[in-house]
Image 1 (cartoon, rainbow, N blue to C red):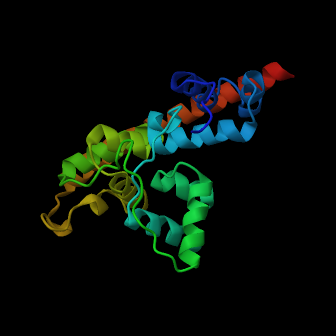
Image 2: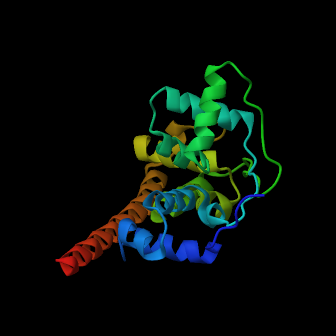
Length: 224
């Protein structure tokens, strides 16, 4: 049995939000509560990737499908991102877990589905174009928190990530299903409505980021 954490989930959330919202630095917060800076950074990454469930004091093994493991490993080996980036993208709890999968994959060992406890990863469901617009809007407004968005709308983490990335790279037309209404059947009015909705979300997030930077500046000025 693992050692019980001296911090509850609520306490961890308090310190994580304190750093994310710019009310204090990671280094100072970690020193204040008597933990290593890297531990606090891991809490922040777990929260961004898995939501509040990533801060559970006594987490159970979450379900990881073979497909998810292979996708994460292949992305990492292809240089899509750092270990931290891949963990955030796929909702992986720690870099050590990803490293274990990479090692197995490189040794030609099978990556089997694992974990039976905890909250299973949401499976995909059929969504309409308007739903995908709403889901991407919410995700952008909440700093691309894919895990929180997936839980709120009862879709898979990978779907949220894919739709948001498609929109950011190719615009609203990329959110069309392809099995129903075709791109050339989408009216200009429909495009404008969808674009305006998502631009509002982006502007809202940019404003939050500006406020965040202002708070950081204030903190730095108070230190000197």
